[in-house]
Image (cartoon, rainbow, N blue to C red; front, side, top):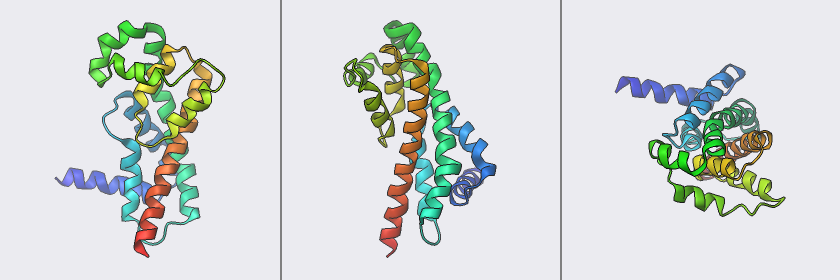
Length: 182
């Protein structure tokens, strides 16, 4: 019990007092969370703002953007490359064989893939889907691999989308808590 309390306190301290010393921690934890998706990472991080004493300001949001959201975005992009690569190289047989280990079925991939039309705006749509809070990354990563999205745009758009997602979550929780406090 004490270990879990300490863990929660560590996360709270990292979020409520963001600094350059925490960048590697957020990058690494985001990368690991993408490799082994077991938790709604953006919700866990943003929910720590519920314990913020004082006001949620644009200065706090800027610190969260620089010291949390950007490292999370880069970590998420790099951590999602193995799923993308597996789908890119292995396609449907790989998903049917290994998808059960990460709770991903071919139907999930087909749903994500149906949103892409093979045109110029697929990358914009991909960025928007990556930016929406609560939309799981794994089916989108696999769909990007199956439709053979190029690796460089995939990594850049995934990084941007994850960064935007974190900022959206921080804004929703931070300004929501601020509004409730008044």
